[in-house]
Image (tube, rainbow, N blue to C red; front, side):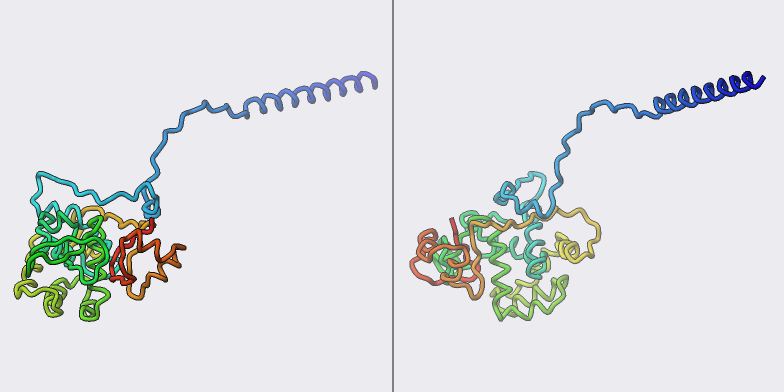
Length: 280
């Protein structure tokens, strides 16, 4: 009797162990994750960020687009509003003022001087050591600065106002106060035309140019404005600023003074504020 009981107990234990093993194996099989099928990832272009503008591949010249459906003034705004906004961010000059001056002084980019020199603001040589063009203005064949790209004309315009003491009071005005800026430019002697302020204000209000100011300072009215073109910082040129000397520039870029003079056809060591020096 005792042997039978012992044998029965052994059979029960053996059965139990077999059942546990089967469940464990079944559980293991059911818990295995199926291998995913190999899929081909689509190549999504990396979005352009502010850092991308330093990429040499993006250092392209300013492309002026002809849009038949737009008037000459509207085309000018379309092409240069972004650059004017960038200058406003850097120097505080209202984009509306810069655009209105550019429209007025360049004939919406169609004037003879502008076409030959990329000079949108009629800035004369005054010691300029870069390339030059001659154009009839107040007197015959006056000397005007020539730029390799329109954006450098906009930068020179910013520096022209920013670094001259007679325009210093303008920067006390609010950046969206285009009327004070327009009148202040006349008072500072920027133009001789007595109606110069009214002409600027009329252009600004007719084409809603003040909205470009509001967009920069974060008060945009939500109008559809052109995406700003970033001004690229070309490592192959140097923009002369107040206090620059040929020796200092040569030392900064590990070049000789003679090398810089040769690259830029300079006959003396004299430099002009806003002048663009080639480094290669």
